[in-house]
Image (cartoon, rainbow, N blue to C red; front, side, top):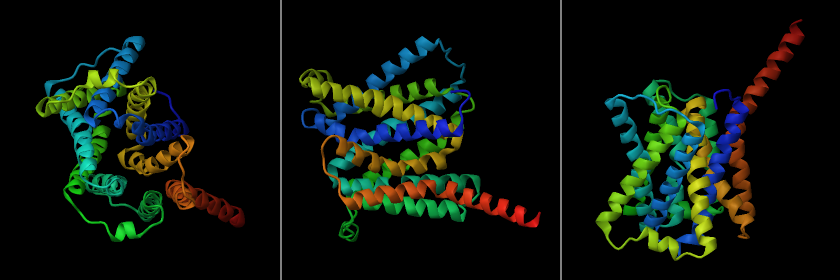
Length: 313
């Protein structure tokens, strides 16, 4: 990925977001017969194996890092992969799915504000408007146009847990951009997967009565294929292409595409035969408008500049 145009970067980023979005309806094929903790274990185990194979095939040498650099990578990996997934799944069990989706929809906004605060450069009007439009589209998709869902929203322990998960993800997204200068993409992603897997396995050991191998072998073929899909596409493709975009575009612009996750989840549900309402379709269009707004305004400004030059000449 050394020589990559912005169009290719954005295309890979959209593929990453689609992979993450598709995990939600695909996981429904599995979670009725497998615990969420076991699914997360297999998700990261399959991802780590795939990344190891990629590194061996590419014969990519492992970079020489200092103890301080290893400590930093392990810390943000434990936070952004292990901690995020553990808190997210724990929170989802304690609250409504809509509440969880509404909280996670704030992730692009929190990431953008975090980057702005760290760089001491506040958001301009275009960025603010783009975030606002994208968030409103996400709310349409999630609530299906029923604003009563927002009016009745009340914080509970599960919501607070998901807020903590969302903050960890924003921190991971922001910190990932700092790692790009001294750690290549594939090794960084592999460390993230191994750290996340170790975190979840350690947590499972304290819970007892969780048997990932037995649960996987008891699944029908369709369920096993769903687990493999989640590990390969929902994890390897998702994380590698997202981190690639973070390194090339910046954490805030890449995080903005997070708004597409519920859109991609809805599209996947349609492909799997589930129904999507016209309100949700409208919400998808609004999300896309929010993402495209900065480029559309840029094109308008360029066109006005050209027209002004023509008139003056």
